[in-house]
Length: 232
Image (cartoon, rainbow, N blue to C red):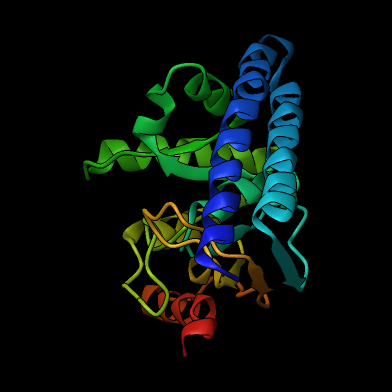
């Protein structure tokens, strides 16, 4: 596809998606007055709108192999683009997403995210930050919600395989849940910090659950290998 068509598609996506997001995110923020279920439902609508814009404006298809868990489990996802941070809200039922704590301070959006059940991770290390994260995670598990985490901690370029952050091992040990690793290749079409997004297919591969009870080195090695299958 020509660079001009790619530019036009990317421009239309940014205009239509972000303008359309304003009322949808506002509705999500207002839905906090009607309980968590209302926030989750309205956030799902926003994510479905995102999927529609991705599919029909950018020309990006999604092929999923495997099934996401429907109950309490830790879902560890490779992170290459903004694409997956929004898509998880409708691909996974009632997810509790681990995200940077400062995102909860964003006006309007932050209020909805907090009520949605986002699990905050502070930039600073220490026992207090870990306790806050684990408290929110336990609350999600008590509601039988799957916990979504991007174990590398930030977006990485295709081919990069950084070590996992400590948070995934802490959740795994404390919660005693299986880990479902998820590999994807979104960065090929949706480069980090780039305006241009190419059409094509994003593959999402949902791996077999890794049982609880393993040591830190083994669980990290197995997750690392599973989420990087497209980079091998």
